[in-house]
Image 1 (cartoon, rainbow, N blue to C red):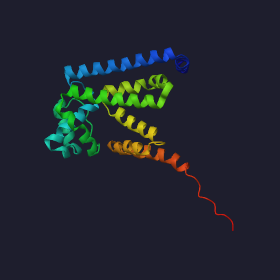
Image 2 (cartoon, one colour):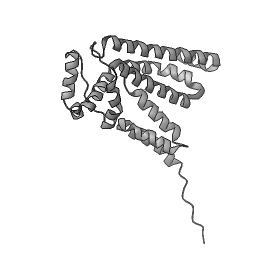
Image 3 (spheres, rainbow, N blue to C red):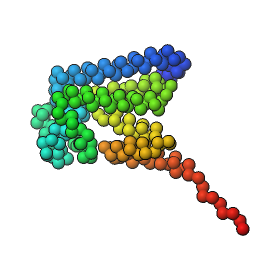
Image 4 (spheres, one colour):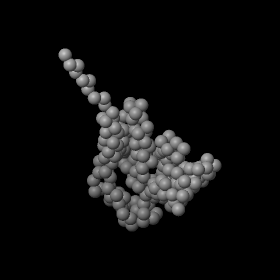
Length: 217
């Protein structure tokens, strides 16, 4: 059934346009509803706190001058203090470069910081995805929609890392400097950068021309 749906989308340009508009509108609605939820109740209202709650907390610690505490058990105590010890806590394992990226969001209210971060990274991710998928963009949206909705809900940085890896894939053949910059920005998640770099290096290594043969005297 799912495969038939994907085939029917591909067979008709009008269906592709319809699905793209509908899915993008749904993603925008999910983002809007989640932003309103955070505006009305904040990050720490429910037992299931979004990942962006930790992002915003780290951004604040950058300007308070005690960022080192986020890498210790004290960070979980900070989360417990904000949530009234009613929710699970996440340790902070991101490298300092990601902390600097988050720092400007400390000057915004929690809901506005969440909206700006998620909307911006989602837009970059969708643009990159469209460049890669081409005429199959509608089918790719259908397949990835549940994961994208979940990422919006928790405020994770999956859109950012996905866009960076996508840009690496786009530029690795013809714009190697561009691909290198995108891969370097993946320092925010070094383990994914190593994996992406290894995958991109293997085809490049396979395309090396063999050394010239020596002519017989």
